[in-house]
Structures are given as structure tokens and as C-alpha cells.
Image (cartoon, rainbow, N blue to C red; front, side, top):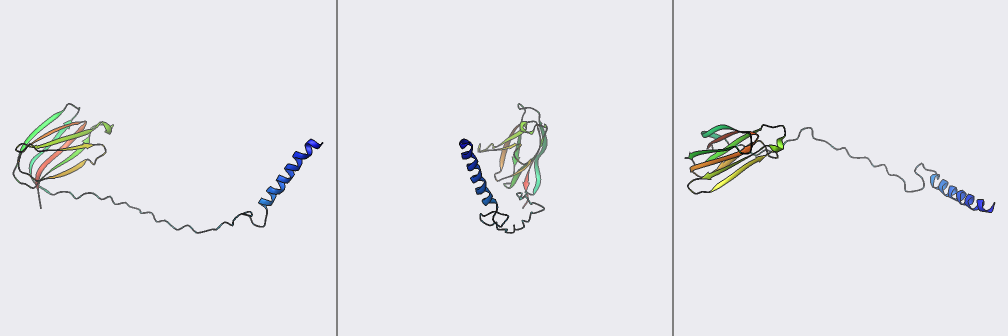
Length: 160
């Protein structure tokens, strides 16, 4: 009987201690009282405005054409002469595949007098509409390559 008494006494003491923790006059126990602080209201905007860069106003066209790139080996070259130092390149991309990660476009613009070139590219991470201001006159070669995209390209004078 002595071997049962020690565990029963231990359980009885444990029960008294637990009962003292639960009871004590408040429903929150004998610990720190719970402070009920009001939560401030959060206003959520109903419309989000995304800042977009200003678009360039284009005038007389040097080149306006659409190009379709259906595989990676498609390469197209155009040559033009720019007479006004204030001009721009603008293109709009339409992906031709549901798997947009396979779609891409690259354009290398080379001034044939100075051999200075600039490369512009598009992937599915970019906006489909792009504009780039240009500042030097002369003969230019535009080399384009891409995969699964339709490109609408405009090269034109910039208006003030």
C-alpha cells in the first residue's frame, strides 16, 4: 500500500497546484491581466496607380513595319538614314506562344558611320511596349532576332 501512496500524494499535490492556477477570482487566471486595446482601422486603397514613364510623341516615320519571329534562327536586317538628331525607336511585342517564357526579342541598332551600337531586348519580364529616344543622325543598320513574337516597329522623328 505504501508504493501506491506516494504516486497518489504526488497527483493530489499536482491537482491542488493546477486548481490554484486556474481559479483566483478572474477568468484570466492569476497571471497578468489582459489589456483590451482597440486595433486601429486600416484603410485599404480601392485603386492602385502604377507610374508609367511618359511616352514620346512621334512625327514623320523613317520606318514602320511588322516582323514575325517564329523560331530562334529568324534574323531580319533593315537599313535606314536618319536626318533629324531628335528621333526615337518604338516597338510593341505580341507573344505568339502560350508558354510566354519561350518568347524573346533583341534588336541591335548600329550607326554605320561611327560603328557605335545599342542593343535593346525584350523578355516576358518586360512591358510589351517600349520606346527609346535617339540623338545622332546618319545611316543606321537595325539587326533583329527573336523567338515566337510579332514585333511592330516604328522609327520616327520625335516631336517637341
